[in-house]
Length: 76
Image (cartoon, rainbow, N blue to C red; front, side):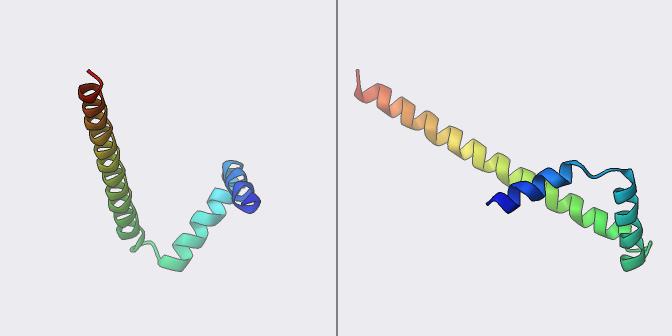
């Protein structure tokens, strides 16, 4: 588990030159015509993950609220 934390900490310290090298590698590997398609796909995937996490949060709140209401009814 320590390795994961180290990796996350290292991601926070990426500076300008490293970002430029990564972007240059991406352009060389995928080509400039594929980058918009890749970005679009990443955006869609991020939106789906966000929507799914929001749905899970709503479901948890809903079940917690109904459990609280049920607990209040039984304790009266």
